[in-house]
Image 1 (cartoon, one colour):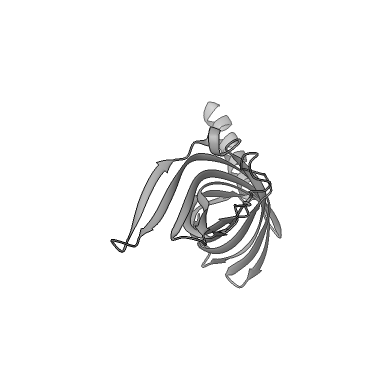
Image 2: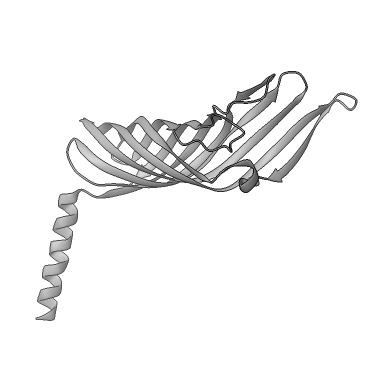
Length: 207
């Protein structure tokens, strides 16, 4: 009797999972990030290269689905002093949780899909690199130190919206591009604006 009950529960779980069309995958790649932080005169911001990686889960079948993710993302920006040979690079390491609507169109054995939705992120660590050009020795010197969130930022939370598109090829391979626009002000009160903005270019595998 116990075996029969177990088989019924197991079969119900399998059928329910099939109907839900659950899938998951891993992905990672290049992040190109910047920040619209207002800066002192003669200083401009510039993008930096970072990286990202993590897992995603896909629920639903047909045209629309739901896709939550857990991602590590290196964000940040570069502050260039136009009046001297000096720049400061800010590297911010976040855990992001996107909650996305996914719309997909089957094309032969492939799928073209689009993602849109919010994300929330929490900075787990950060570093500042101060780079100065020594004209006498004709070399760049670098000083690196950990970010002091209590001093440099009001808190470690980030959040915003995501839009992107991707291709699923051969039922497994994922190629994706995605723009992320932060809407939370992450800097302290010395700055009137400071929002993360970054582009993710990813490769992944769906199971």
